[in-house]
Length: 398
Image (cartoon, rainbow, N blue to C red; front, top):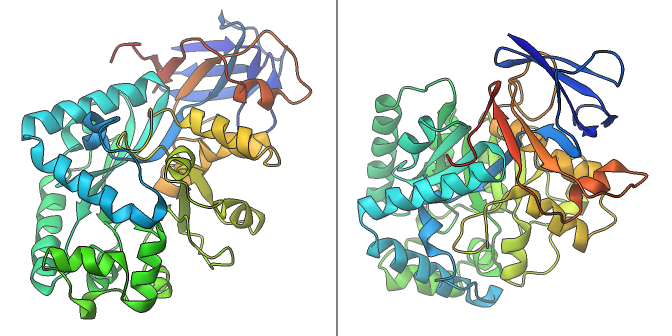
């Protein structure tokens, strides 16, 4: 029932890295994480980094078939890109959407993801994720800016929660989509009901102009679809931050244009999607200011409509190449424990600690040395990752 693994480097995340450390797995749990020599190993994994299972808190698996089909625009034409996403979704049958979800899930698993937060229209990814060898939070996407859509969206959300009994590894959550697509009252009600939730926030300058002045490209975008009801909009950015303060966990996706001094509470996290951010040509993200103030920031991939793959470790490596001042240990935390905290799974996942689920990834390392072993982990290096979930090695072809 127990076996002990060793590797060139073990990264608990909750503590310093251990050269040739060991991780003992008993059943589906971690029972010990020790330094070299404290316990003999049953299996030596070789020149790899043993890290907690990776956490990707922001995906759109149902858009996995859109890779390369909807090129990101410049920030001033973000609504044009949104129109492309809407048009793409309208072309997909239920069967095609499910195939897209399975393809995206397989890509996440291949890269070592053991916890995913996915936003899905009508909660469409639930069945695939509930049966997959990974933990998940499925955010049912809510669209409802008008008063009539408010009632309809809220009723559908409650029916969905009633119909989906939460299994051990998959949790139901809600995603009031964004300030331009969901009414302020609906955001407030979902938070008041105690949902874990995610909201696209401050993603584009047009969104900020809509919130602050009720003008700009989003006004035209909504008017073109007969959805312009300014009385239903959230009053301000502050309204959304304040009204979600009591929800158990709130993830603000993107946050590209959040003021660096924005006050965020302990239950609120920012999910920065670096390569999607770069693809749209946004100005530098304020994540460094947030980290300096102790705000929780985690990294996500977004969907394949704006990103080349669903590898959250590649997001960390991208940030390292752009922002060498960010400590490498911080970046590892942002794709493991910070994401688990944001999604409400930190009691089970995100770090290698006794009592937690035995979810871990063996990441190949280069044949070099560095004073900071985190730099080896963040170096671009080929090789297939090997993933353990709940104490069992996962097939490389899920």
